[in-house]
Amino acid sequence: MSVEAWTSVLVILSFIVYVYIGWHSRVKDTKGFFVASQGVPAIANGAATAADWMSAASFISMAGLISFLGYDGSIYLMGWTGGYVLLALLLAPYLRKFGKYTVPDFVGDRYYSRTARLVAVVAAIFVSLTYVAGQMRGVGIVFSRFLQVDINTGVIIGMVIVAFFAILGGMKGITWTQVAQYFVLIIAYLIPAIAISILLTNNPVPQLGFTFSDIMERLNGIQVDLGFAEYTQPFTHKSMLDVLFITIALMVGTAGLPHVIVRFYTVPNVRAARYSAGWALLFIAILYTTAPAIAGFARYNLIQTLHNNTIEEVRQLDWATKWENTGLLAFDDKNGDGRIQLTPDTETNEITIDRDIIVLSTPEVAQLAPWVIALVAAGGLAAALSTASGLLLVISSSVAHDVYYRIINPNASEAQRLLVGRFMVGFAIVIAGYFGINPPGFVAQVVAFAFGLAAASFFPVIILGIFDQRTNREGAIAGMIVGLVFTTIYIIGVKFYQMPTWFFGISAEGIGTVGMGLNFLVTAIVSRLTPAPPAEIQQLVESLRTPTDEPLALADIGEEELD
Image (cartoon, rainbow, N blue to C red; front, top):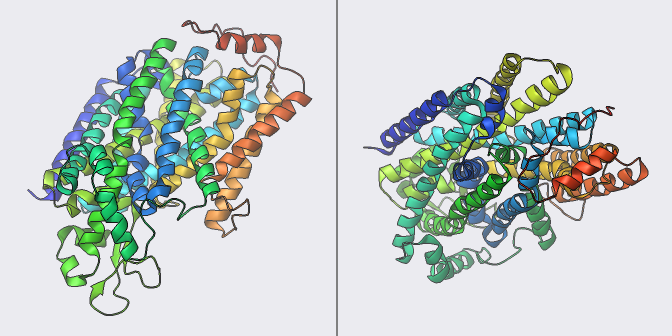
């Protein structure tokens, strides 16, 4: 069968599984809808967390960025993996012990303030919408190449599938769907990596082939011959300071991502939260240690396949023609010699490759079997859809639980809350679809913006809310607003209005670190200049760090002193 036929079969089969799980896991109460009734086993929650966290950016775009940036691309590996460790050690167990449904729930109760809750809701929605834009673009890219439909149609298909299991099953349906999606995406990532490693290095373990063979030495030589810096040379694309700031932004942004944090509310107790964090780290490491190998192998194969060949020879390659039809791969014989050259100079470079096609095209470039190529497409869809569903539920819960139930209508019935939650999932899917059709950037770039916004808004108030009794509502509100506004203005100005990177050359992807610093500073200063939190809130913070497995009794703690 052809690649397209295999893709159709595997995608349809996987979607049938997702839909069946969504139907089988349908819920009738808000606890099941928002936190899966807090009954998910640790190992299953670990797999779901890994799928939720390893989005289209991890599966589709990260290796592409590393392939283009070389050494400098390691910022994504270090930032995202280090951030997950930070989340698992410093935040997850304490937030689970706090016993609430959402991050705005924690902020609202810890800082005894409706205003703080609303600011957190705005930040959660803003971060989630930015993040989900990257996922929907990933869905569109996969469909446009492998099912030969336009990107807009692909996005709409993805919207329908996510809507089904997210609206019907809520967090419970999403959780068990993500467990299945994890195994689809990890198998899809490893099989071509192993096959290509054997072809290029004679080693079936990609990590070992990448590290102990001469493949990087060969790639460095090719890069230098073409006028590029060596693939392994550091700081050729970004300054050392920018690399540092981007890495920190990605780390603390990971620890502040609301759709990942909420996963630790779905397990039965604090002990299970700790174990699920460990399982998730193991599941994540399998892909993240493979990504650098995929990136290096992909760049080597692409250069060998495309550079200095005639356009006629290249267009005889079925995969090249089909990717060219998507607009994500382009050839331009600028000097008219009939051959196409890859060079570091944009004036003479004749091959344009979108970073987001590297992983998806690698099995085709290596001439692997059609079913392997199709499997990668199914894995890319699993990665994008799993994260998109988690993000959509964050948007839904932020409005339905934190605004409608906690502020507008505290007497709302289970049925009313569930209806609002499902309506908001549907509304958020429409917004996500718009961003998928009109994306503000390539997948990993858009996701990096979301991490920067999470770093600048959530991380400081969560970490101070756990470890600093003196932090009060005034400080938290001021810090979140300053961090979020500064970071948003900088990102939008640099990326869309040609504003110079005036803060020591820090890029839009790294400015979240500065926003986080401003948040910490403003929160600490304002908290010290205004009255201390009530005694019961300070006692709550003290109890939160006590190493017991019992959830806190929060019935009499919360927003008594409303703004």
